[in-house]
Length: 293
Image 1 (cartoon, rainbow, N blue to C red):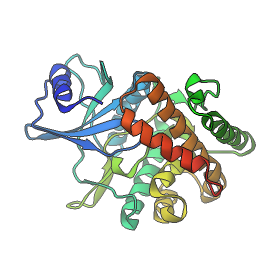
Image 2 (spheres, rainbow, N blue to C red):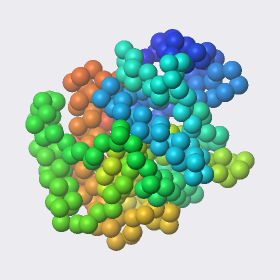
Image 3 (cartoon, rainbow, N blue to C red):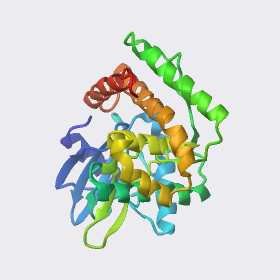
């Protein structure tokens, strides 16, 4: 992860921004993010690994599409060269305007309603969105070398992937544009206006929308703790209750496998956030080895 001095240098060189304050955001498992104050403007900077550059660009384009449909989301800021992202020594960096308001708390019932509502609205609006950077939903490469890093890793991930394959073959699922990492801290509500939105749009690719729901439920602490989120999502999103209830157990386990795969890849390849990757791998192992999952 770049320190503040390096981040200041990158923002100056690629965006001509001069930050007076940089605050790290606890935001999701698949990227690092900061809130930046430069002059009178606030921004959100997001750093991902190089392989995710095209999906991030798709997400920034999707943010513009969402704004056209009245959904509050951070508008992307192009680099001095006119690009949506900048490739740096530490990964791919993007900058968006900071949407007014505070981050949502995943344990708060009212915030869960906003969270589910905005994820559902995103899914519904992005059914009309297309971009060449959107990847088709990819199951994990079970032969990847990094899955051999620990004895438990490959067998646990394989079991979760096989269950997800059976689900997609035997059940009719609703497909669309995925956020990919819908942590509550990536969503916002403005107390002054009551308007909720997203800091950025992940748009990691296209796949079963129930996967995003499962990822959010994991962030909320599991299905019982996520009741208000699910109510908010089902009222606003395009996926029906029976599909969510049928797919959720399998896709929650698959989400933990995705986290384990991402964490192991980060640690093997020297990714952007190694400390976060170690914590995430330990948490994923505990979940995947839990008999009650």
